[in-house]
Image (cartoon, rainbow, N blue to C red; front, side, top):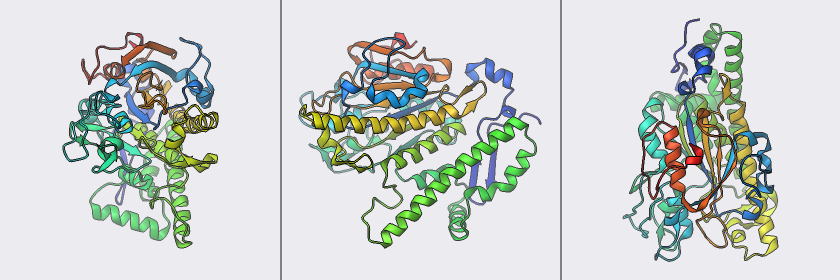
Length: 446
């Protein structure tokens, strides 16, 4: 068949299913030969309350480092993984403003600026790196950016020692007074990615699915069959695999929603409706949809908060009944350090799931992870000290071949973390010489 438009979609009642990158959308030889033709993606995955750094930091610098205990779940993607040590967000320190490290660590993480200490409407931060990228490349995709997370956050009120809840809840900022609200409901993200048309039409599609136990794919079967008949063998197989991944996510959504409805009827205390009780399943569902959004080029920019900083959620999935924040204030007590290490590893296991999923998505002679830059880490290093230097940061993926070979990079103490961001923006084709407190690019990553 002739070359298929990259913007081809499958359509049905209140439904639009974007397609992954198929060989017929671009001559394979050109796609394989030129990294410039591959869309580069950027994601920032945030975890709260620092790390048990002794189990996080590799013992050697450079290539060939051994994965420390907390990072061992990433063994299958080690060839796409760099550990970045020595970076800091100076403006997350008190700097005369007293307590409030959790709020500052969140708001400053992707901005690098000193925020105004207030719990009123006069919040003051700055544009974050994801939104700088979205302003430049967001017009090339349906969604300029995607903001998701596992815990809701208020946009007003006092959440941390006089700091607005907007600071504690948001790593993505469109401007100084405009945090981007994140979506925490997997169902809402699913409907946003695949719903289309007028609200009435989307509501009709959803109602029919619920009434007749239909999948969202049932509304595009005719379109899909017609397209598949025109595809080559490899593209047809890729289309089948992609549609099955969409179907798998929808089945999982329906399954946990059914369990939750039964628990409500039984009077069991559950999280907010539409939110999985199991944090791992919540992260994986949202992570799968981030992968689909990247795979189908619905967006190239995403922020994902595994939890708000200061979160005191218990992790009963791994038999930890104490709150995460309480445990992070370990006072060097070994039993707390051990539990903190288990929570850290649990988060890394979810990251490994997401990265392995990205690696499994083929794009020409490479894969989705190769064509992405994924930052994972925290805005606090040691949760007991509340320090914002030597932050635990991973840089995953190869940025479409624009990043150097994976290694443990040790930068001088208090190197601005925003230097990493202006370096990443450079590799997205975004001209940005200064962001927050940056003072240059990281030459080792150039």
